[in-house]
Length: 293
Image (cartoon, rainbow, N blue to C red):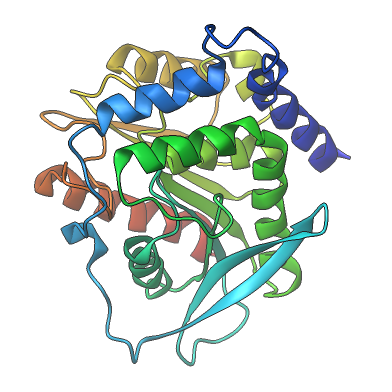
């Protein structure tokens, strides 16, 4: 019942953008505003591999494309990676793309995460489409936001697949940029079922205690002090709301770092912030998904 309530909550919240689709074409919808904000941040960016997408020895992991669910008879297809010869069952990790889509750099990052001891499933929120330019990415992310119910069903199906098909002992989520927002949305859809959530500079994070109150898992967030989406003030309000609710929270602000400072795809990489955030991420996930599992 709690899972259904969480799913209904996040679907209702995210569907607000879809509720305005009948406005005159001259009036921007919430999907327009979100996609335009992301596009502004990535105007001069490109989906090239950053040092975060450092590949692992191929002998250390095994990978395959999988179908992890369906919605309205259309399948969800993603990329599953596990350590070679790892003792089963493993903790699971939902890996959520940034705004470029499930590209080769995200697949590489998924292998890197799996090598840390997880059944890592990279979900595809664009149903097989990948952007090569900011304009293409804006079109894809806008279309995805307008179909928020499918996005919610997607991440819930990923969780269920890891639990049911992979027998995951615990499940966490991690995402960057657009995927950072959706890492939090996954937690809102599964407030008592998800075991840990990592958010990298998700621009659409809620600061409303009434929305965040349902969350029962530890939450870690990584944000750049130079970012405008979300701004430091928004991040502070997010942290204040979580702390006021007594949540298990780790929120980090990286001085001198901008939006997308640790993206596996992108040209805005900040080595110092990316390395420190990775160390913190690995330790956080190990503590909450592996230790005493």
